[in-house]
Length: 332
Image 1 (spheres, rainbow, N blue to C red):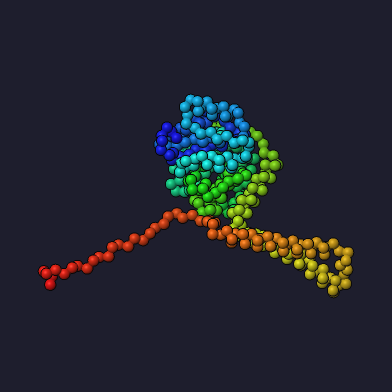
Image 2 (spheres, rainbow, N blue to C red):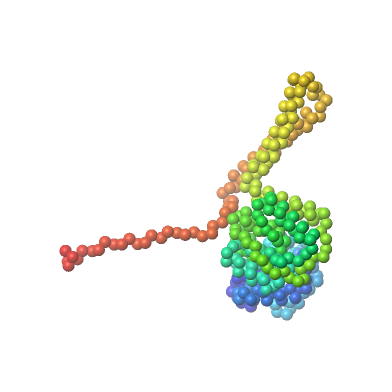
């Protein structure tokens, strides 16, 4: 906490996964960027699974007197879980998340914190961004697909540098790979989100390659967020639409088969299409019923669900009424 007994204003959470830089160099750059703000702060490193090399560097920092907190998880849980574990140990009203490798310049961290004067979540947008044409095409495709399904436009959700008001993480629970979509989930809950251009670090170069599994997961995550954003509070709109369309298609096929049987003397006993159409009708009704049950669950728990945020409350304070002048002997 920068050596002070008072609670820190800024809590810096650094989740440490498979990719990381030298602990001492990383901490020195991040510390300089936070110290430039002139506020009290604390650093929390969450080691996601066994990372002996980085853990040894953190031990040397603690041994040299640096007041850092290290949270070591028993095994690999993912960055979202690591962030939530760090938040449980954070005391600041402002939460800053930074990657365990050089992604942005440490001097740019202050931009994210200062941006919270106008928003609730400030996410870094590395600009200009280095990379070849394939990397640019991949990023553009990802963000365009996300914009198509969520109606929200972002440019660099892969950036792990963020500044967040504490109340945001008090109302949003991250799991899986949802840390990338924190801005989307925050917007859904009524928080103000803003992208802040930050300078990319010279060492931020990914020289590996993403496999088909990674791309598949990204697509699935996008549609997961799409469902959470659009239909969490209205499940019948999704399941009802799918159920009605399925049943309608099956019903039209059944109707056509009946017309063929009545007016064109076509046999139905040896036609698999009749069985398929009947199954579609039944399946559509079942999907519709699932949506209806979801609506009942939401209605039952609606009293404990809040999907809005209050920016401010302005009370009207009436001025005290002017008292009528008293009559005195001189007035009479």
